[in-house]
Length: 285
Ligand code: PAF
Figure (cartoon, protein in one colour):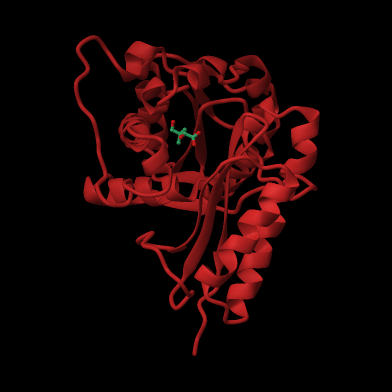
């Protein structure tokens, strides 16, 4: 059965009080729609851990630092609701824009430090937009747990920090990236890749896997990154905005995985910006 679509905060709050009276544990999956298997895996995780699940769909203008990207972002509400039907979610919250940013809205939530690097460097203002809307969705939905994909690893770190810093009583749960058979991380942006670019896009993940293997073998990141960049260029990738080894918690740069670490990449392919990341186990020596 298709879940009710709610567009007003007052309707969401009414439902929420009923659920609280039942003593239900409430799960939240925040999305911008154009749902794919990655989102659906978050919904499945939320359903497994919670009694009631809210999926939100809101294309948040404040997190787009490029007007064209915002305009081209796919909007597929009906198809999204159909994809959610088999999961038995309890509500789909598609807030009218004024329910998130009413007339005179003036508050920004900004997480320092973690947002200065990687995506933050190339998409100024993006994480302020994310932290602001996610803080609002956490507070509006009053959920006990929220589910985010590791594909947007830095986002996961930022919203975890934000909820902790603001004492929002919610558990932020990261879930493994879901990949196409080719290895390409699922993303709503993949819909915009040409068939030719789609054929090449699967080569990003093996480059990360290969780097991770070399690091596990004791290599220094500085000695192997140029080779990985050259492999991507040969595969047809354009500008590589970053390809870094970072501490998995603080995101500070590392040359060796001497603590839990993450390889993260952002690269352009056929006019589309792709991001991906992979965990690198800690070397114990
Ligand atoms: O990952 C996304 O789709 C968005 O950044 C989020 C978390 C829904 C906030 O708009």
